[in-house]
Length: 359
Image (cartoon, rainbow, N blue to C red; front, side, top):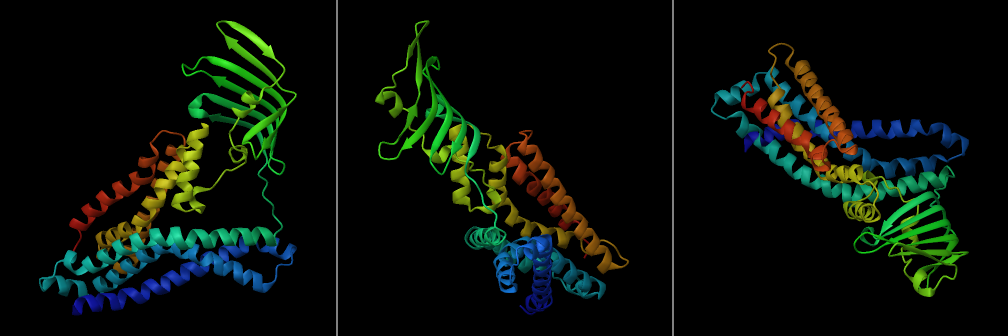
């Protein structure tokens, strides 16, 4: 217990100071990136402080793995350079047993930071973005151009030249309906279509229906209520609803991905980012294992060389993850492999380094 207290006495202050340092740096980077826009829009000092406070949870989430990496590497490197770790291991305490408290803490932090992101980081960051857009007078339009939607399990395909979200109206509408055997049933054209909220369908103007049956085509310029009632895809589907999955919680992210699947839009990239939400917190445990395995590898300049090795390993991990996520985006890898592949690879490397670490 005395060794555990001694280890945490050295580790915790370093971790806290490093977290605060990285958090402040990230806040300042975000501030300077938009500083000219704030000046142009006469944003007050009080509003700037509010923006920075709303951004703090996001910076803590970003800073946690790097802070853990630096704190563990610094603590163990100092103990190596002062021969403290040599004395501890010589007394019969293995490196695994000595560093086990750090590994346990990293596991709890990994789990905790997943929920921290979902319930704290995401809502506060959303407030920050909305408040920033208000201050900078940035408006987001939900209108959409050249919309193609696949509905009813692929049996109905909507195409519209333009969607006006304010009036819930489609322009240049084409709807293709297929039979259960995927054969063509009918094609509906309309100059425009307005959403009938009470009835729950699109009411077409200047519409024409082309029906195909047994090799014959019939034309009907009188749109029946039955035809229009079949056009029941809600207006929300036609909106410009591109969402950055990293900026929403897991529930909203999964709902967005399900919507993309339902309307036939590509979903590989958002699905890989969704899996990354679960994979990223595990990096905290991974960097602790890496730090323990890499610290003390060099007998000269132990502190400096250990920190360089740890940072290099962290950079290698992030580069690998960036590559696998990019490959998942273009479907060279599955979304699951794109998100979790680097974690699995570096976990194996970390365990190998840990087993061969110098004591």
